[in-house]
Image (cartoon, rainbow, N blue to C red; front, top):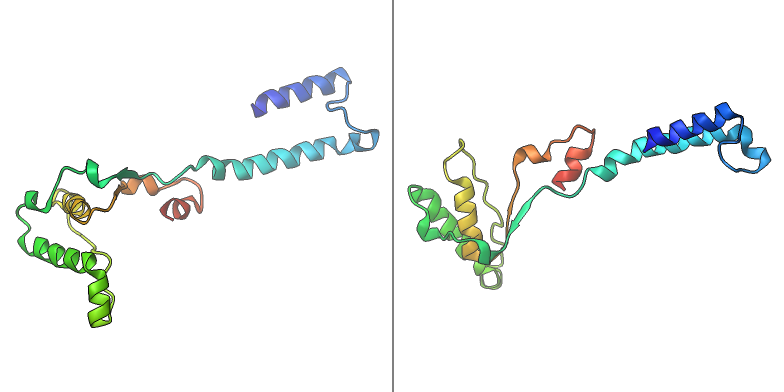
Length: 151
């Protein structure tokens, strides 16, 4: 689109016609205005094209995994069940004990050990949506866009 505009402006200039029907006082400033508009498009374009967060949202009704399906992670599963019980009984915990329960669990480990599977099962058990995001989807080639996608 920008190249078509540039070609049209060159044709108008070579033909000796004014590129844009502007008042006579702005004729000399036309190239500068065009450069400023193109510069603004170049700066703002990548930010507008970055798009939304690249996540996939699974509603609790769409998740067909439960904590009963999780096998082989005994200690982790026990900790998850304890955390879920605290999360689901938040008001009771706050009123009786005066504290705030943990609100998150950080799973770490090599690929294929069931971290995402366990997180999906937790979301289904708690009745909350599950947001799935691949880590490579966060990376952007423009400076500052990676942080924007994470937020």
